[in-house]
Image 1 (tube, rainbow, N blue to C red):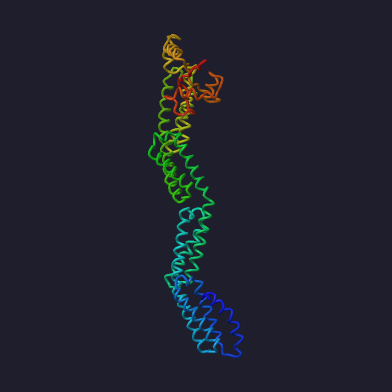
Image 2 (cartoon, rainbow, N blue to C red):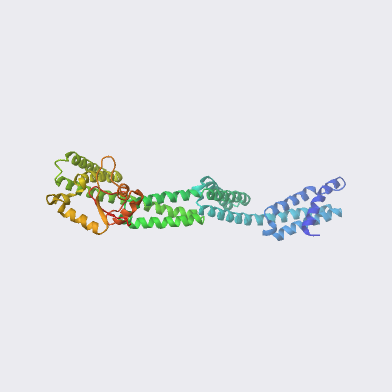
Length: 401
C-alpha cells in the first residue's frame, strides 16, 4: 500500500477512532491537528519543495494509527504530535519558495501585459496588477509568505486579464497609424519632401515599424515608433506649411507687381485693389502663423492679378507685342506649338469658378477624365494638379487619331 493511499485510509479511520474514544483515551485532537497540518503543507506544494519532511509527517501519522490499534494511546499521541511538527516544518520550507516562484510568474505576466501596451489600452486592469504585485513583494520582504503568495496569484490573474483586454483593443494602434498617415499625406501636398525631408522620411520609417509591430502584436513597440512618427510628421507638416506659405506669398507679390505695371492696370482698378487686399490678408495670416489661410489668400491674389494680364489669352509678354498684331511673338509660338503636336492654352481668371485641368480637358478632348494627360505634359510647371494660376501658358497635347 502506497503512502498516499495509506494516508487517505488513515483519514477515513479517524471518525472510527473517535467512536472508540468511549473505550480508549484516543488522541483525537492531536491526530486531527496532524491531518490538517499535512493538508496545509500539500496546499503549498510541500511534496515538491519539502518532500522529505512531508513524507515523514505522513509516516508518523500512520504510526500513530498503528499505535492506536495496539491500544498504545501514549504512543499514538506522541506520533501524532511528531507528525504535526514535521508537517509544519514542511509547510514553512515550502511557502517561501512557492511565494517567490509565484511572484516571478506574476512579474512575467505583468511584463507580457506591458509589451502589448496594457498600460494604455487596459489601464484599470494594468494598474490593479501593478498594485497587487507591489503588495506581494512587500509582504515577501516582511516574511509574510502566505499573504505574499495569495497576492501574487491575484496579480498574475490581473496581469493576464490586462494583456487579453489590451489585445482585444489593438485597433487603437491601427487607427492611430491611419491618423499619422493622413498628416504625412497633407505634409506631402505642401512640399514636405522639399522643405523637411529628414523629418518626413523619419516619420514614414517609424510608421512602417508601427505597422509591422501591430501585425506581430508588439503593441508597446508599435506605440513607441508611432510617437516618433507623429512628432516628426507634425513637424514636417508645420515646416512645409510655413515654407510653402512664404514661397506662395512671394510669388503672389511678384504677380501683383506685374499687374500694377501692366497696360490694363488703369482700367482694372477694382481687380487690382482686390488683388492687393488678398495680398495684405495673406501677409497678415503669414505673420500670425495661419499658413493655410495665407496660402489661400496668396492664391486668390494671384488669380485676380493674373486674370488682369491674361484677358483674351494674352499675358504681359503678349501685350508688349500687341502693335505687331498676330504676326508677333505669340503667333510664332502658336505656330511652333502646332508643329510639335500640341496647342497652347492660357489659364483664365473667372469670378464664378476657377480654371482647372478638368475644364480644360473637357474643352479640348470632350472628356474631362483626360486631365491627367495635360498634367503629365506640363509637369515642369505644374507641381500640384489642383493648383494652376491665371496667366500660365499650358501645352495641350493633341490626341492621336
